[in-house]
Image 1 (tube, rainbow, N blue to C red):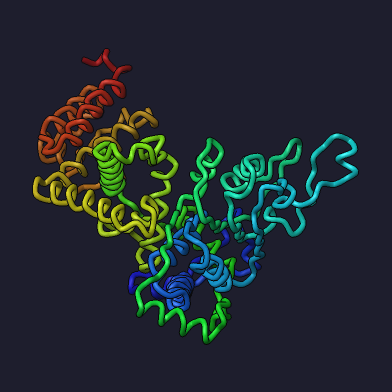
Image 2 (tube, rainbow, N blue to C red):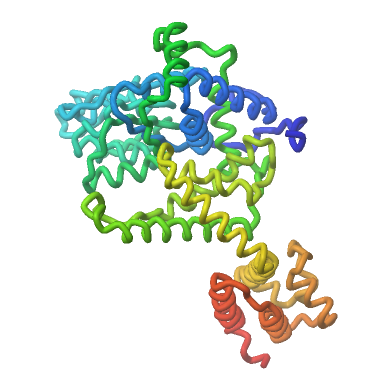
Length: 453
């Protein structure tokens, strides 16, 4: 973690989220060390659940929720309780779901005086609304009416009931279930739980022995860790991971974002291809495998969280395979293997063909065109004088080397853009498509300057 081992950052510019308790600065290296220590502690305490534990902490760093599915008695409750025990200063809401429950179980009882006036107003004291962490056991035992009411709380962090709108403190909810119940409502609910795990009972004699040892020590209860993480520090780390702290920016370069999206799309296609190649399993599914735009966008937060945990202020290509913790169900090795294969396939293709350099050049042109579109004053400046454009294989460097002319006219900029684009000969179908989009973008950006030609 040498990159940031001495970094201490001001939080005066951070707004929203948890209170900073008057602290003037945050030692991010200490936070990183604390989170990594907590991961290791829980992994030692909850036997043979390393991947799921890592998944849960990534969810907490990104402010997302986790769904744990398993048969009874495999320790889902112990896992959640041990994770929550690693933090101090956070309120925890716990409930066992049932079909008889109404939304007030989660949001607080209705105020009778308001109810007499025909208004549904909840007293949120001590409810999930005012808790930072939540554990909902057997979540699919809840009725659809209650699950529907939970959707906005889990996603928008707001209690929305009739005329009542209340901001929620919810950071991460861990839900457990013994089965999946599929309906329109539960599908929407599943999309709120971006991280999912299928936990199998341990039948290996060695792991059963380790579990027995832990039980003899602590009778199956969560234990106090030697050191806890302040919830405010977790909330601050989540601000960093979401890119909300100007003083600490975890960089994800445009070409890495583009390549990541290609890997995600490739994985989605391969998953659906497998589904269609197994017609005997058609009765087990009602729809194709689908990665929502929301989930794909959250992949960027997960990349930043992975880099953050490694003490880096930049994400790298080698972080992408870890996205299986978000995009696959932990505990299903076939999904993880398929995602790794998608990454390996595209990585080899792009490395062998030199496509990474081509991608960087095309995205640099896209950046230049975007700036020209959004700042018309740049049309009067020579392209070679634009600031902030990467010089390595960039359109600016190409323009200087090829033409060496500081012509500020829009016509000259268009010739430069078109010439640079034509100098790139895409080596993959994805890059051919990207080049075609940029050809159209050039026409759009310079459409109002045809009089100069």
